[in-house]
Picture 1 (cartoon, one colour):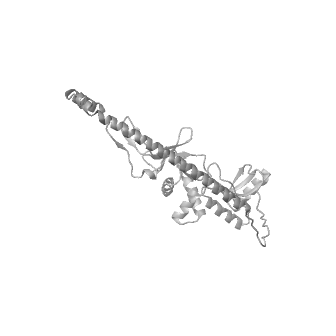
Picture 2: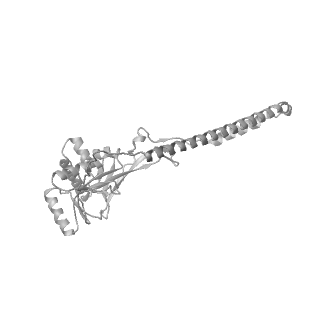
Picture 3: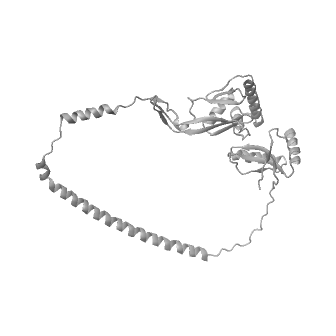
Length: 312
């Protein structure tokens, strides 16, 4: 399945790749660690997981397919639908579906979707070229015993006469340390005085600049008339969503397309999932919103859906 290769490519670049109508692959960072039982060193990695709840189309996967295969966005969406339909059919037949370099899907006894990631695959580009390796444990006790044995064979002898003869070096060292401490203290005092002076002068300069700015008078000849813009307002709790996009430029492009078709679209604030949602219209009445949604699905966008949320 060629589309699994596209998913694998995107997992290197993004932390969330949504397959519309099927679910989302998520990656999380895992620090390097050591398996003490096998003495195996493992590099940092990005671990893949799967969330079946995230199925709304954000445009990332479809746009990537369209750019790689040089086809239209609608054609890419149709390929995704065929792909997910085939996967669902194989799973319903009790088969295990494998995604190359990602993992496997299967249904358990309760008909719940199960995902098993491929442990050997690392999607962290920062760890490219790093692999696991095994290193034998270092036995430090051996070296300790060797040192103790050498100490027993070669005892250390102290000579009082030499220590007494070189006692003047101790007093010389103390004198040098005392002189250095006095010099360092004087230097710190001088640096503090310089910093206080610079700070005071900087405050004076800032005060002078602020006074000059406040005294300045700006006169504009022939002022331009005020410009008023009438922006479309979306009120109500029921909103028809044209799409949810991971990249803001894709959402802006969708807004322009809908505006050219005569709609008054609105791009919402980014959601907690990092998606930019574009609205066809908003309604106060749920029945009116559902009738409009059915009309848009039949004539415009079969993937449109209804969002119930207060966006004031």
